[in-house]
Amino acid sequence: EVQVLESGGGLVQPGGSLRLSCAASGFIFSNYAMNWVRQAPGKGLEWVSGISGSGGSTYYADSVKGRFSISRDNSKNTVSLQMSSLRAEDTAMYYCASSSGRYIDYFEKWGQGTLVTVSS
Amino acid sequence: DIQMTQSPSSLSASVGDRVTISCRASQGISNYLAWYQQKPGGVPKLLIYSASTLHTGVPSRFSGSGSGTDFTLTISSLQPEDVATYYCQKSNILPFTFGGGTKVEIK
Picture (cartoon, rainbow over the protein chains, first blue to last red):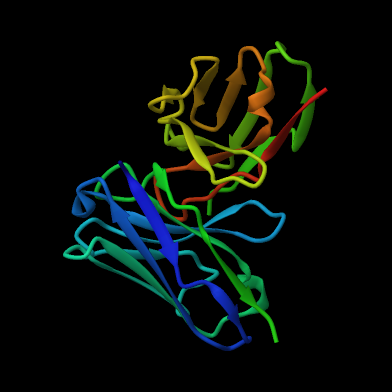
C-alpha cells in the first residue's frame, strides 16, 4: 500500500526556521520526483518545491526561493524541506506529493499534510 | 509565468445535473493539464492528467477535454459525494501553477 506521511509542522516565530519531513513507502521511491505543495487557510493550492527522483535537480517557487531548501535520501525513502526566514504568509498546510515519474509534472500520491503556523 | 484561470469560482447544481468547469491558460500548454478534487477538510486527489486521461479508480462520470489554452472538466451526472473544490494545474514547466479552484455544491 502506498503511503506518504509528513511530519515536522508546528508553531514558529517570524524569521525562524523549521524542517519538514516526508516518509514514503509502497513504491520505488527513487523512481519518482517528490514535491511540497501548500495551502494557506481557506485558500487554494500552491506548488512550493520539487526534487527529481535522483535528487540531482531541485526546483522552487519564486515565493520561497532562497529561503527553502529541498533534499531527499533515497536510502531512507524520505524527502525534507528546510524552511528558514519564515514569514506569516508561509502559514499553511504543507503536503508532500509524488509526481508520476522521475521528473515533476502532476501530483499523484499525497500525504495528509502537516500544518505550519508562523506567528509571534 | 503562465497563469491558470478557472471559472466559475463556485457553482450549485442538482443531483444528476451535468456540470462543467473551465480552466484557461494564459499561454498554450499543449495537453499538460491535470485536475484535482479536494473534498471539505480533505486531501487533494488526482482525477485527470494529460488533460483527458482518467486516473486509476476515478469514476467514469468525470471527464476532461481541451488542449492549448482552454480546458474543461465535466461531471456527467453530479452525485452528492462530488461536493468538493476542483483545481486545475499545469504540468509542463516551472512553475507548476494551480488554478484558483471551483467550489461545487448541491442545490
